[in-house]
Image (cartoon, rainbow, N blue to C red; front, side):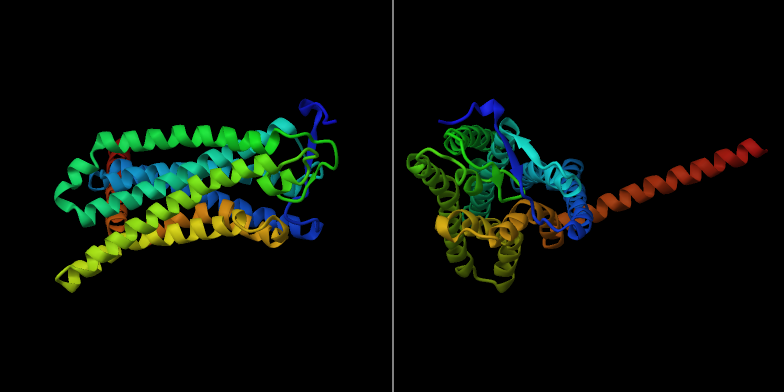
Length: 325
């Protein structure tokens, strides 16, 4: 018999049980989390204040930056607290909500990456119809539908993971409440839940990655038919940053969730850290350093802030001199 879910508490074993390593890891991951917040908030602000970036691609990018912040925030604060605390218990509800939040925003990211690929496909393969295909209304409809679908998927996914009976050990061999370590603690049969989870992953991960792959195959065929080398180089450069994010995001995702259950081990923690903590930090750097429009907008905004600071300094110095006289 399973216990009342409200009475269940789990113990997160965390990244390491070595006391000497916990403080350095805390500092390291706190730095990563801070950079993640600053970088992604910076992208959102930069797109908002730069008229040249008011395009569908950067509209999707701001939502992607927002979901990066949310994914990281679902995991990092709890992980940081556990690195400094001896009490690593988490309630059943807290564990379930952490998983639900992470799955919700991670699913949105899958769909946003597919939308960004669709946007690049329309811009390169159908440039004359681009404004019609990717209108402002279409962008909002796509984003709203991704949030709705992700919410429904996350509810079903979470129910499959936490809907069973927990009557045995309560130690989760992970630094957050992830699917595989939680399912290992379920006493009841999980076969039907695992089938639903597999369908969920197939639709949201495999489905979106296949859509992205087909979009880029079509883009590649179009680019190779372009007459000038300069046009081809410009098209490849436009897609480069998006491709890098896709490879990192789906590469670690496939490694974690599409391998046999028996092969899950300590290496999963490393992959999970990269997927949940490091990748959200890298994305702003990839998009800003590999993107000419972002660098141009960042430089322009930086000069504007510097000029405003100079003007304030001049006005302040003149005011002080006037007061002295």
